[in-house]
Length: 341
Image (cartoon, rainbow, N blue to C red; front, side):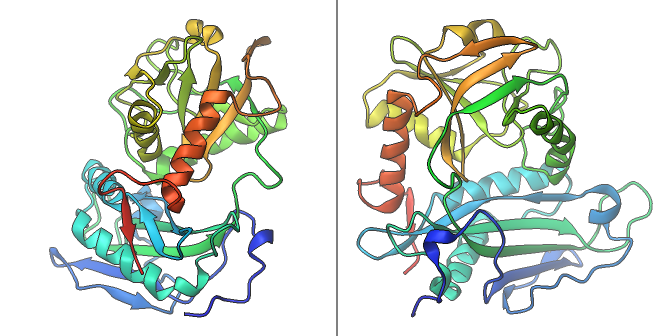
């Protein structure tokens, strides 16, 4: 399929309407067969469960053009699995991960003209989401739901190059112990909006959230997991039941161990020990790894040896290896790459 006439190099990280989206509906205890539609409008009751009680969960993944011209996605089965877990936590009927992967393939193939070419730095972003659609006025789960996948071509998350971020230790809590921090619920992100706007107004790029119970342990930011590198080259990520199980983070840990021969572990990390790390990054779908140069803890600066001009050396190797796997330049572990066409 001939590519759309888009200036791929000028794309930002925003929404551009594409030709097709995938839609399936849940009613009378079952999902319908679902399919593609050209209609980008969602029509629901003014009393829909999603509007009254925020009963919605979502995912995010990308489709890429590889060096040899194939269109692929990265580990969509894990996105489907995570969406299943998120749905269960909010009493939303599970959309099976096998159907999820099939829907991803179908919608990407239909919008293949919007998948940016290799070397452009851009990709096709996919946003699958589930939400309650029928009227709910009492506090209870909806009985009807819709699953959708929208797609949009996006440019690199860091326009003009990667620059290390400055974070602050946040006084707000992101998630309660035994709450919903471990799932990808829209309500978690709504709670983070005030904190991120406040951080930006004070000149910071992001927030570092601590555990709500003791406020001594590192959790995550509003939309990404932390990744640290010790001075002796070990990769360490925070362990907590209230942070999102990032697919990018899990993949980076595997890359560190099996591609770069590094030690890597997931464990509790205290705020007190952050000053002793050599490198810090935020990992997620949008940017893969965002380097962190400085964290400010109520006026006290924690400056990483990697500095404020570039990624640290190990963070950079992790970034280059994982993006190489995603783009087909480096051979992927079995099952990581799902070929679309």
